[in-house]
Length: 90
Image (tube, rainbow, N blue to C red; front, side, top):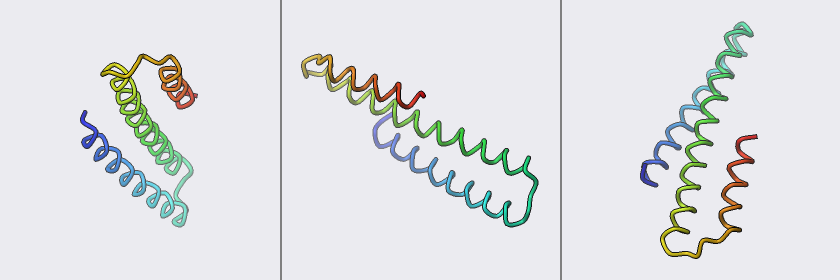
């Protein structure tokens, strides 16, 4: 995925998430059941996780490709990318 395509995908996902949050607010105001609300919360959690994965994937590709394309293979830079991935995965 190109950087611009990834950016567009991320922004679209975030807009969708905002819509889901507004929907949950309305559900709470309307006293919908906990089951219904929690189902929507789970959908938002999954969507947020996917946004994080796309960002992490693009970050890792960009950093590692820059290293491979001429920068010295710097252990510290590679470790920083790995640390970012691990922090997200926790």
